[in-house]
Image: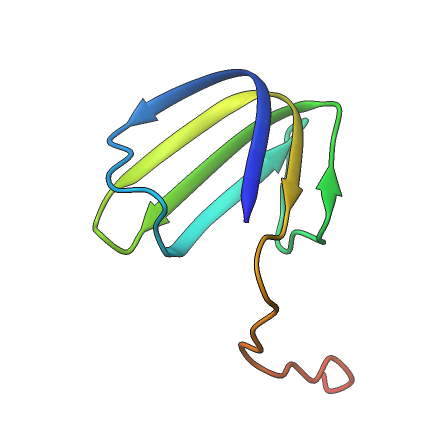
Amino acid sequence: MRFFVEFMRVVGEVGTLPGTIYGGSLEIDGSNLDLIPLPFSSVGSCNLRLSILDGSDFYITGKNMQVISEGDFRFVEHNDFSAN
């Protein structure tokens, strides 16, 4: 994935990129998103926390975020949303 953020500020140790993301969170205009649809675009303020497989954790804050997929699709897991 590629993240584009205007007025971007990075806090923390970014580490080696490109890297494998194994955790994180995204907040847009104060609302947490559990899933990010791709492609994704928002004109509000954003707070993105990423944890990279090399052990680095960092935060990106800014506005007007875009997220696009890059490369070939790779199946990760099946989710059955019909069950309670």
